[in-house]
Image 1 (cartoon, rainbow, N blue to C red):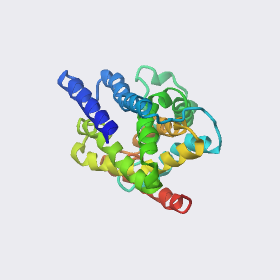
Image 2: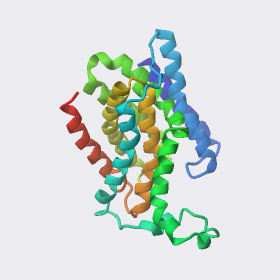
Image 3: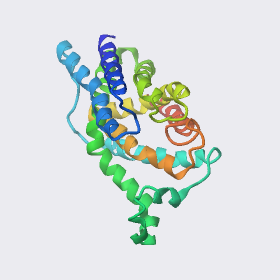
Length: 264
C-alpha cells in the first residue's frame, strides 16, 4: 500500500538520520524526535486522504466509547501488575520515590507518598486527554484513520490483523534502539508486533463506536501516559514478561478480544 510505504520509508529514514546524528532513546532529544516520528504517519495519511478523497472523521462527539477509551488503559495497566509479579518482585512506593529528585524527597510528607499512585493515575488521565492525545493522533490518522478506510471492506478482523502488523513493524527502529524493551531489542520487535496486533481491535472498535479517529487517539494517548506505572511498581527483571507492554498486557488484550469477537 502506497501510503504505508511512504510512512515507513520516511519514518525509518528520519530515525536513521537521528541515530547517525548521535541521537539515543535515553536522551532528552528523543522526546522531541518521538513526537516527529509519531506525526510522520499522520502527515502521510492527511496527504493521501486528501488526494484520494477519503474522509477521516475528526469531529469530537463524546459518548460511552470515549469514556471507555479514557479508562480502559488504566484498567489494563493495573491488571497487568499482578500478572507481572511471578516474573518480578513488587517494588511499590520505593520505586515511586525514585521518581522524585533526592533533594526534594526529605521534605515530602508520608501521606503524599501513599497518595502518589492515585496522583500518577489522575495525571495520566489528564495527559491522555490533552497532550498525549495530540501526539497519538499523528499515528491514529494513518492506522485507525486512512488504513481502516482503505481496508474496511475486508472486514473488521482481517483489517485489524493487517493494520496491527503494519503498525508493529513501523516501530521496529525504535525498538531496536531500546524503546520499550531496552534489554531485549531483537526479541522486542516481534513482541511489539504481538502487542500492536492485540491492541488494534480495541482501537478500531473505539474509533467506530466513538465516530472519530480522536476516540482512538484518546485511548492510545492515555495508554502511553499510564503504561510506565506497571514498569515502576514491579521489578523489571525481563522486558518481555513484565508490564502492560509485555506478555501480561498481550494476555489481557487477548482476553478482551475474545469478548469483542462475540460482538463484532
